[in-house]
Length: 308
Image (cartoon, rainbow, N blue to C red):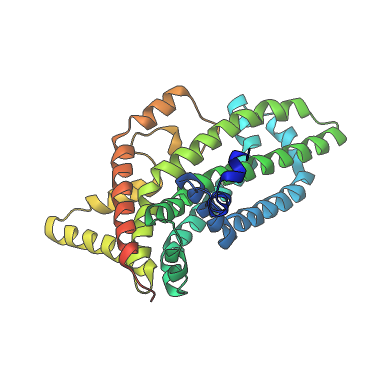
C-alpha cells in the first residue's frame, strides 16, 4: 500500500512546501520602526553626543566637588538638595531639549524626504499600508524617542554619580550625603514620567501636525508648518485684539495647563496625584484628538502624493 504522502501529487506537495509565510500587521509595523531607526541615526546619535559632552563637563567639575560639598553643608536641607541635584537636572534637561529638537526636524522630514529622494515609489510597491508607515513614523517622537532619551539620561546620571562618589571617597568627603540628597531612583521615576507624559503624549499634536505638513508640502516644510499658525494669530489680533490662539500654542510647548509638576523644571517630583492631574487634564485629551485627526489626514495625503 502506498502512504498518503506518496499518493499525493507532486504538484500538491510542492505547493505546500512553497506556501508563503503570513506576515502580520504587527510585524510590518515593527519592521517599519526598525527602518526609521536605521535610516535616521541622528535620533540616537545626537543624544549620545550630548551625553558625552555632559560627562566630559562632569569629569572636569568633579575637581571642585569636595569644595561644593563643604559649602552645601552650611545650607538648609532644601537648599542643599537643590545645589547637589542641579548638575543632574541640567543633564536631564539638556538631553530632553536635544531630543525635542531632533524630534521636530525628524517629523518635518519624515514624509517629505521620501518624496524628495523618490524612495516613496519603492515603499509604496511593498505590501505595507499608509496606516502602518505613518503610524510607525509618529511612534518615533511620541514613544521611541522619550524611552530612548530616558535610558541615555539614566545611564549618564549614574556615571556622573559614580564618578562623584569616587572623588568624594578619595577626598574623605561624605558619599552618603550625596546619595541621600540626589536619590537616583526618585529622579529616574520623575524623568520617566516627564519624558513619556510631556515629551510623548503632551507634544503628540505638535509632532502629528509636523507630519501632516511633511506629507503635504512640496518644499520648505518648516515654513509651511509655521505660516498657518502665524496667520491665525495675526488675523485674531487684528479682528479681536486678542492672542488666545498663540497663547494656547505657547502653553502647549511650555507645559500642561493643570500646573502639575510635569511641566516644571524639577525632574524628581512624581506622585500618584501628579499622574491623576495629568490624565484628567482636558488639554491632554483635546491634544490627542487633534493628533489623531492630523495623522488621519497625513495618511490620506500620503496615499495620493507623488515624488517631488
